[in-house]
Image (tube, rainbow, N blue to C red; front, side):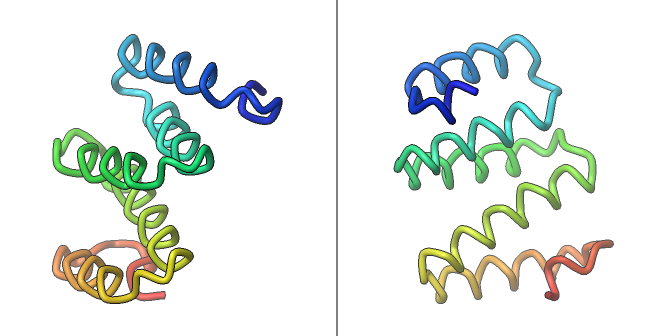
Length: 102
């Protein structure tokens, strides 16, 4: 609601606090990354998803969700060489979902 009301800074502060309080809630981490991205801090959003993927704590479908979001962002930004590399690394993991191949 805060983000939709144009209060991205407030939304980011609240989401940062909530992810610290509830570190296992995937949807909060996804929302924090999305809010950063939509607020224009795209590199921070990408870095946050990379960090979340690197920590290895997420279940398969949760990690796949982060990867799918990141791939979509790379495509939307026209960062095709980086997208190709990202997808190649994703496919090497032999993912269960079809998202990496779509």
